[in-house]
Length: 284
Image 1: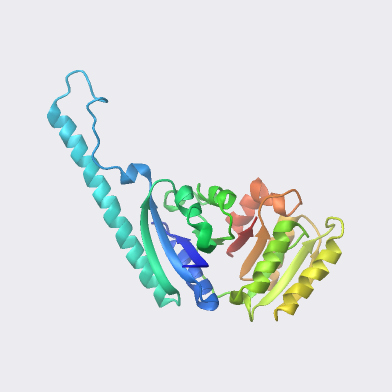
Image 2 (image 1 turned 90 degrees about the vertical axis):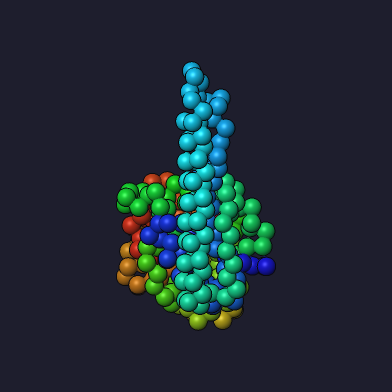
C-alpha cells in the first residue's frame, strides 16, 4: 500500500472528525486510509507475575486475583479497540474513503505511527485525545510529539468536519513553507479549491520573490491561487484572515526560526490551534 493516509483514532470526541477529514482527503486524492488505534503499554498488559512486587507473606489468592484483573482489563481494552476501529471504518467508508484498513496495535503511539510512514503521505490526528477532553484550554499530549517525529505532513483535525473549499497557506519563504506549496500543487486533493497564500509583513529577505514563485507554482498546476500580505502579529493576522475570508483549512510550516514557523513550538501557536475552529495541515 503506497501513499496511504494514516488516521489515528481513539475514544475522544475528535475521533469522528479524524475519520471524516481522512475520508475527505482519500476521496479527492484516491489515497487509501489506514485507521490505527494504539493501546498503551498499561492497557495492553496481560496477566503479570506479581510475586516479586508483593511480599510479607501475601496470600497466593490475592496474587491470582490481581493477575486475573489485569488480564480482564487487557481483554476489555482490546475489545474496545476493535469495536472503535470497526465504527471508524464504517464512518470513513460512508464518507467517501477508499480502500480502508484497520490495525489495533500496542505500545507507544509515536513509535507505532512514525514507524509506518515509509508508505504514508499524511498523518491525521485530533486536536485533543480522549484524556484531554475535559481540558478545553490544552492540546492533546501526543500532538506535538507526533508533529516533531513525523516525516510526513500532519493534519490536525478540528472538532467538527466541514467540507474544504478555501485554503489559506501561511507563507514565509522558508523550506517548510515551500514544501507545503509543492505538496499542495502536486496533490489532486487540492484541485478545484481556492488557495490563498498569505505572508505577514515584514517578511524575511527575498520573501516577496519567493511568494511570487509560490503563486506561479500553484497556478502552473491548475490551481486558483491568490496572494495577500498581512500586517501585524502572525498569529492574530492569520486567525483574522481565516475568519474574514471563511477559510476551511490552514496550512503552515512547523518549527524553524521565522516568525510564522517558530509559532508551533511556543505558546502563541498553541493558542492558535486551541482557538481555531479550522483544521491545520502542518509541514516540517
